[in-house]
Length: 254
Image (cartoon, rainbow, N blue to C red):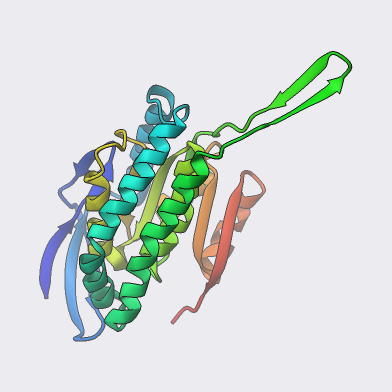
């Protein structure tokens, strides 16, 4: 068994050291690694949401689509530069063959570049509502987006929700499972390398008890994207009528 610390990335800062332990298993050799996770999930989620709200209100992110396009392109470049590392960590974490892990890692940059291009085609709708009266409808970001990531294919599933959220101008809070702690740390490290990304626009935490995910879903002003098991979807369904939640259930529980 090897040990390490899984830090969170909140408000442009590494948060740690760990105060509780989680276990990250390498399926192929059966090796276990204990990763400390700083604070409980609810505490980290609350700090991340506060940072995202500050960034949404105080930075140019929601108003400057050129900044968003530039940042998404840079994010794609940085992820592309780390394809080898992502492949290795995904293979060790999931027990997949390296070519399958590489397929996931290589799918990320193109998705980011696609939404970077969409940012520049942002448009509204104008019409003459009545003689001499013009109506102009524009799309505006809502605020903070919550993203709950599953254990399976964590990187590409994260980007499929994060890329459109960032393109739209929202700030984001990402909750990732403790089973993929090493993957999470690498992804958060990639975010830290993106120079054009304003502090607090993307925040991520690792948790083991699901309290952070429940906090995000319960927050009335934080629309959420949840991809996980049917059991997890059922646990969240009480909150669905209260706010916007996108759920993609279906992971097999063993």
